[in-house]
Amino acid sequence: MPIIGVVVIWEVVARLDLVPAYMFPPFSMVMVKMYHLMASGVLEDNFVASLARVLAGFALGSAAGISMGILMGCKETMNRSLHPIFSLLYPIPVLGWAPLLMIWVGINDLLPVMLIFICSFFPLLYNTITGIKGIDRDVIQAARVLGASDKTILTTVILPLAVPNIFTGLRLEAGMAWRVVIAAEMVAIPTGIGALLMRSESLLQVDVIIVCLIVLSLMCLLFERMFRYGETRLTYKWRG
Amino acid sequence: MAIWGPTGAGKTTLLNTTAGLIGYQGEVFFDDKAMEGIPSSRRGVGFLFQNLALFPHLDVASNVGYGLRVRKERANGRVDELLRLMKVEHLKHRYPKNLSGGEKQRVALARTLATSPNILLLDEPFNSLDNQTCRHLIFELRHIQRRLGITMILVTHNPVEAKDLADRVAIMDKGRIKGVMPSGSFFSSKDIHSHINDSYHDLAQPGSRGQR
Image 1 (tube, one colour):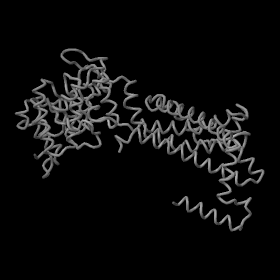
Image 2: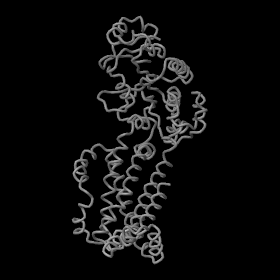
Image 3: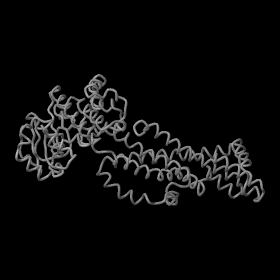
Image 4: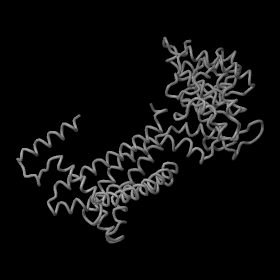
């Protein structure tokens, strides 16, 4: 209901011609533009390019973060050795890496993938460590006394109990990955939703910009919901 | 057997050492066999933790069958048998968060018994229970102990629990066993009275568990 209300107000205000339509197009005009962009394949091409980068960077960054988090969460020596290094790297804003990566990997598809990798890696790393460190030590000892090997304890006790924290990281960082890909495409890459945004800005195509923002918003929301659903499916029985 | 002593006496450390859960200097023998280098899973011990340590992500049946599954033994019949023994078969599909303190206790005990340990180590297992549930469980534990012929070592700071459950009571203080006596003469021992007077002023307070 609130969304419909906003759309109606937007449409009405835009139709009052207080501001020129090219500056503030009505919702209906934006939807028509979206249809044209979809029909011509422009939106699809750019969307697929961004999506592929997000999926690649996010999957690799998350997998690396979770794996390293498991290692550091389970092995105290690893944690003590690596924690100081990651503590120094983590506070660097992800876009701060962009100039360095432009020189190292060049201005190509790898650049946004690397940026998303960095953006996903650290939160997943720390969420996984927190999840593992938060497990009651007695639960792990109980599994050990009952005969479970380290590997079995990892797969049957540690990982399932760390799932809520891991999913919190995934949920928060999925949206962040979209923000990062847009930023990277806006500054360096000629394809993708971010690039389409920049082109539209230079051509004063406010309707296209709004279409891009809607797509971005929907994707952030979709990813967030997807991981929330996954978390619920995996843990609702025992967490309620 | 019960090991009784004040908080900080080293009772839980002794139990953890016996189970091989922590590193230690010195030697632990089971039936004259040195346990040096033998992991806890192969010492033939069952361990009932103070906080019970149930797996929160597994239902009651999976908790009880965990030890059998990881040992690749048949779980179904044995799990049902233990659930019946502990009178929790109706809770089979519940998760630990939906169990009462007494029910959790029974499930944890069933899980511990599932792998048929030779020695059952009980680390202050009745701490979080009300008096009535506690009494019931002590009665049932004695029954199970006799039925299964299993050695039990109970660690507790509650002298009544020690007397009610054990045949023999060892008094422990500052990391040392001060004496071992039949539970029948535990309360008449001078040691216990001096320990109680020194360490358990709170037991004299009305309503405390020691006054049951």
